[in-house]
Image (cartoon, rainbow, N blue to C red; front, side, top):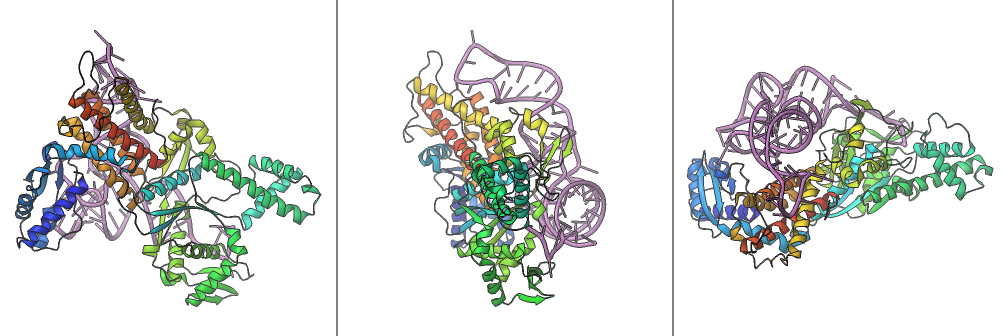
Length: 553
RNA sequence: GCCCCAGUAGCUCAGUGGAUAGAGCGACCGCCUCCUAAGCGGUAGGCCGUAGGUCCGAUUCCUACCUGGGGCACCA
């Protein structure tokens, strides 16, 4: 019985108490079930009686007694104690906990995933860095987190479309094109242009494709330098991200929105909704109606649409493609966008609370030997995602980027990162997986296969370390669910560290395979089942983070 | 000035109102004749920024303040 099953049983007990006329409350749809730290508090604990006491107008302990009597009748519950102010401390029947291992193996790669799909289609936009340079370390966090979140939301049953918005229109692109052309011609890069060494490489590649580049009229050459350079840059960005294991279902082009007339259509739409006004020769959206601190211009007085206008058109485009909820994963430097995006949603007649979710992640700060390192894409002073991967590999890079809360700034010490390998917690988790794999290989060579799930007697798993491990395995589905709901992929990473620790302690205390002239027995089978189940959960969890689960280390 | 985020062990950080607040790293002391020691056990280390408030119960929610990071365009 998993914690989720137990929660259902408690809800049912409340329902029966109400039906019997012993309790006068509305039956909750969900109740809190915790894994107590203190083993004396049973396998699971619930404060449900404390929470219901007020509504029931009964002392918490009296409510607890009503529920305890009904819960104790459950076949899979051995004992229910009432403790402290009214906690229910629940001890499961001998085999009920062990059944978790059986269930994990039966579910395999789908253990931890939602039982049934949800009907919400989610669009998740992340990275969306300007395609005027390589993927920097500043964007790397969003790549790792966004991709993990997409996997977690998918596991939680949502239909998810991962999306990269390519800003291939506007001033920065023109500056980039001018820089590429200048580099090709051997001229000095304009001051406001891009000064990284990669610009020369792009320029050489553009010239290789268009040997006539420098003979063309300036305007034509500039257009080619822009479009060809951008296309080459984008190819590099895509391959970098693919190599990092990060997948996007859609690469959306801002230029395509312009070309399709989507911006004008969006303005018309907004005007029809009654939120557009004209002032000072410009066209404005009255975003202050929906909580923004100032109204935003859609079209400038010179007739050119603003970037904000493209944002509105893009929002409308995504919704038009059938997505029910749009998630934007943005860095804290874009926090000012939140109010505006909400206003865009509201101005289109949507409810920002349901159709929009803007996640703000704190920035990655880089230090070297304790001193801050500043990066600028334009000045060409930056480190790339590739630099990081070259230094530590994909697994360690992804893991260190995804294991901290988005609300916390992430500090990468470059001296540490390039040296650091074995003190990354990812190895602690991967090692547990490799250790299990090795153990199972040994079992196989001894002729001991993991017993058919039905065959092993899981009731034999009573050692405290075995019980700890079973309880940890039972947590996984709730961890996935919580990580999805709160948009917190780091929760999966932290859970895996916990699970790996519990496994290592089990391994230390409980011998699995027979040694010397011992014979394999029922306990061997049960422990092999438990170990195999642990490997499944470790692999599933690492998979959600896009980190490999090695068979050997 | 206004808005967002953070402040928890020496350091880096977990902890969506529950019982005695945790992990990794660092420090110190132990454990491989045996399934991978990238592991395990133990010791030391805390006014959960400060002050109020709500609650049976607050590290968690609310208010104010202090400190640090980020943001406030007819830029992109």
